Image (cartoon, rainbow, N blue to C red; front, side):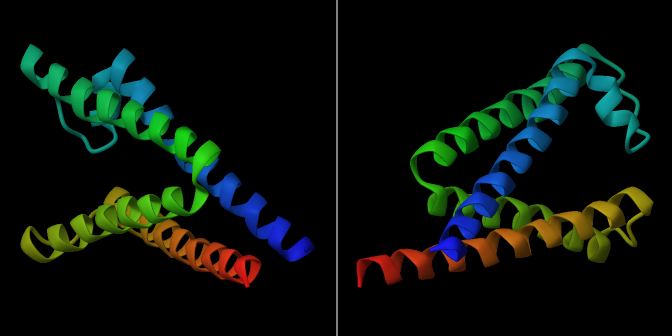
Length: 138
């Protein structure tokens, strides 16, 4: 029983960490889009560029954060499945970039490691949750 509770708390904590992480970038993008792009040394040169960063990192990030909080409250396994895909596809996009455009810099490499680790955590917690659910049904 304690093991099931530990898995539940770890799952919810990981979902909350992911939501807060995405929300922090979203807030940066809404209030200062250039600060997001400064992380990768890209200068925003016109209003359309600012609008795009606010939309993609701000609006989409906020949508993802709200969705994760909703899933945290209603369906943790679905939230973990979603995070498995989200972090996994982030990592995949960096791997594709490294193969097509060349080696990643320090920023890209650091985030490839983080996103891969988060994907692994999400997948592991998802399987542990499914195992707990199937045990409870039996």
